[in-house]
Length: 391
Image (cartoon, rainbow, N blue to C red; front, side, top):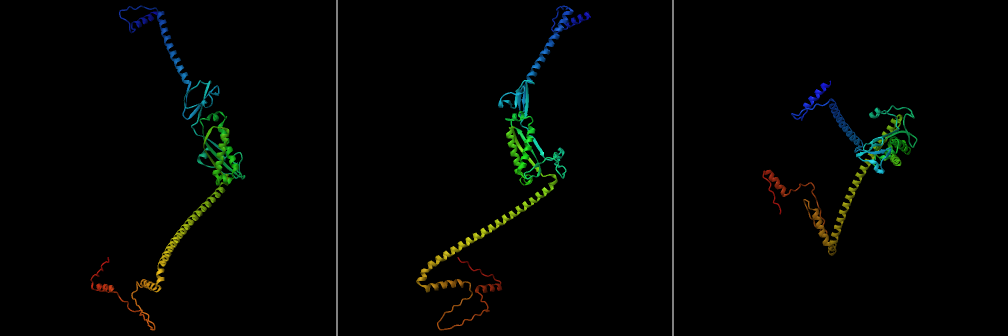
């Protein structure tokens, strides 16, 4: 066995790279070769151990760092207590460091996500499938306390109501929400239930269901904001949707009343619209008549003023010679009257002599010279000469 080992060592020495030629090979003892192999093995082991230690150190340093996402904040708890004071306790998005657990514990709080809480204390039970399909349970002739939720209105009636609230955490006050309460979600649901019961005591069933539903919803919102601020929950409320409904057994009657009121409101609106249209038309006609009357009145006033002015101008001439003025006025008037008369006859008046005037009413109408020329031209076929225009 030793002979084989010695031969292998000699061959290894002969074939070793970098061996000078013509150098005599010194034979080694078997113990020196084993020590060298052991030394080389230990050297390789130490290198592996160093590499592992370096990796462990890098892994340890990496484990001391953590990152906070843009839509969240973080709080570092050291032995269960927040590190820092005030706003310094809140770790903003970015890279941070901490000791490993159990020394430090990182609590991440999502502030960019919208959260939802639903109040169903005043609503009848529905399954998720019915909720998705917008189905209602079968109506029962009586109310089942403990199974069906309900609220009592100010007039003593039973109605159903529920609310859905969406909110976000405020980054500056998120610690109050996360560490100030054991279960803030249950607290918000209790606040929402309380707000619905409170609003129901301030409104009648008719107001809450259809007549003044906006005021009922606003009462719920105001109550929620008041309780949230009072408990310092540190949230920002986005929306609060409130839904009301009468008991299922009398829902049809409520719908009939609502339909009748809507029809009445429609008829009233139509009547008011017709009344406004008629009044506007009458006012327009009255304005037109009044404007025409004013215009006519102004015209008459102007005419009368003109006639009065003319009379005032003619009055001195009349006073100077009344007889001449009357004759001149008579002549002007007769000229206007006899403008379109075919025949004109003048009779003088003589004293002591009686005259008799006979009129032939059915006599043939005398034709003018112009008409005779037209008839002659038409009979002969010659065109009628056009009289020259006066310049």
